[in-house]
Image (cartoon, rainbow, N blue to C red):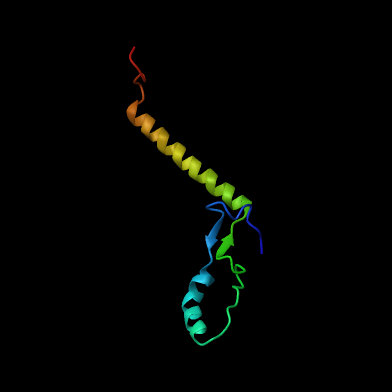
Length: 87
């Protein structure tokens, strides 16, 4: 299992799908008196870690998208051939 760069930071992991599926089974199991068992996928944390490379690549992709939107807004305010301010 890989470790997250910092598990306390928002966005450094994904919810564990196995834990989501286990919630219903846990309710039935505890009513029958069985003991709790940790998740084999996430180790009981409820989070699947992301690698540092994935975190950085997602941040770069989001920054590029924001830059593209800001450039579109700038081009809409100042069409080609028009000066940006009074002459």
